[in-house]
Length: 297
Length: 122
Image (tube, rainbow over all chains, first blue to last red; front, side, top):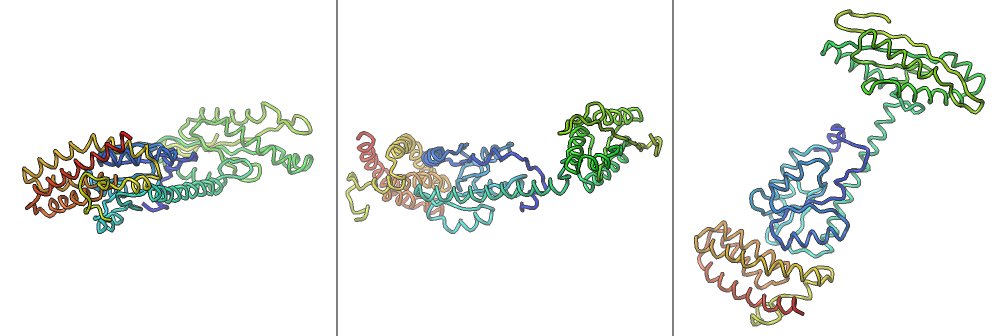
């Protein structure tokens, strides 16, 4: 799986992966298993140790499973190289760092191991410094991946959100509307759209300055986002205009939504350095459903 | 000084100093590993013996491979070499002389265990 595929998966969460500090050890030999486990724990890794490849694969299929795997080549049931192949062909989400363990006389196998998707290998018996260095190298790769995923997420957020209000920006809310329109055509459920406009916004800007105007926009965005259902979408259409997508509602539901939005702004005056400011919102809505075609509000 | 030149029961059955060094100087860890090995090796040895007597080449290869790995981890290089020969025999399915090889492995392991016991009881 390539990085872009991982990014496309969007199985990406904003918290650092819990699997980053955990290492899977698959080793049938108890001496080596104990050796690996002891060192890794000393280096503050959480360790999941299993005795064969089948159990290793079971662990890796779980959510938040270890991102680094040390797999012995020769194991009963499923060998390390088969686990490695499965990781590369079936694994979804973040890239996993795989270290294969081989015996000294199996150097020729190393090529096959790397071809099967291993990132690195360790030859038994190994000195502790070597183990440590290889683990560190793997950790670097995984941390780099983590940093890339976060950078990607941040960019993605920026590209889809309005920097002032953190609502969906114009481009994003249009794409959302298009998707929801397709969905509504498919499912037969109606789709409501509300356009909301802050009243007399120019006067606020003119009287109190643009900083105040920005603060009002920001507060309005927060209030609108809090007033909708979890599956509605709120975007900043531009200037003091907001676009709210309300999937799956009847005419009365859309009216109620619009009224909730209106009240969220007008009910409480906005706190400001010059005292409470009353702000109002004008709204118009439109609804489309299979039964009635287009119907104004 | 090579391991093979030494009489079997001598301290040369395993290279303690080098092994401790490879463990970053951690004698306690080595002690734990030795204990696991001492506990584990009779089972592996039985597996190997059974595989040899039933001409199970694959089984010989696997059991000898495990023994070889553990021996090399503990720095018992001479015995590891013998186990390695058995592994190769199993791998190539050329088992002539496997029984004799097994007997010398057994002898080497006996000597090794004596010096391992020296270490664990020290």
